[in-house]
Length: 168
Length: 216
Image (tube, each protein chain N blue to C red):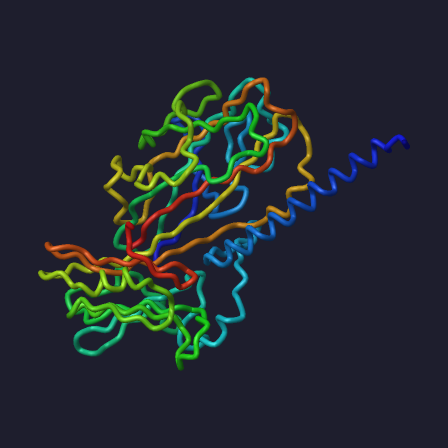
């Protein structure tokens, strides 16, 4: 059996963090004004136009038998439509150390890539070339929705994020 | 001149927008499928397996992967990715005694050949690639058949793409019309080749059977 892939989300205070497996596809998480792993409660915790969501701390999780997982690339493949007043930010350093998520400006300071970066942009074990050689997680992909007052009320459309990796 | 009914004009416009969106959705879906992209159900993760997969039940296991590998060792023994109940990973391959590596498609290529699967074989002893079906342009074919000297180091991996979605609400409003987006996307590519001190010859096989030079 080769590698099994899934996303995992980490929540809570750094001193008492919890990690939850999200699965592999579909609406795995939502941006909201709450730090928890539940996707469905976003409408009860809306992001008010002009503010930021809580940070979402994701990792790709690989289990099973493989020689190496590397060249991990992450980008936003389809934007919100319309995307007026909505910007997804991320932490390009893909930190290996977890920090308590906040709804202010913290780790997610750069615009998330919106096309295939071509080379690895998600670290594993602290490096872009390190890869995983046994079951484990990539470093953190920290996302946050940054809105302006121009953001329309109501649900946005779905934005799609993509992960690309090599398995040998 | 009669005064136009503003509401009807608006309805006409919205119906046209909706129709255009469906047409665009249909056309883009058709093109994606042609490229080898697979769609599954987001809520269950299930992928519908095309009918054309069925001829290979028994010999090649059905999986979400469009190509499966098969290794022949120098003593003639064979290691297949899928063998009955067993599934092997790249980690199970003994690199020290490989004679050849073959990627074999789980779908038919439109062809009159006796075997209509796409097969791409690398003879690790000679560095020669062999193809049955699939498409590779002549320039690429000439390039990979110009075999560089030196000890060959096998390059063999799968490149996988996964998509997932996120939504946001800036106000408590129910989500009503996005059910058609209950889908997930899979796109796998299959890399095979070798490196020597004098150069490398690596190909990447798309899930629709198109073969290109890797990194070009």
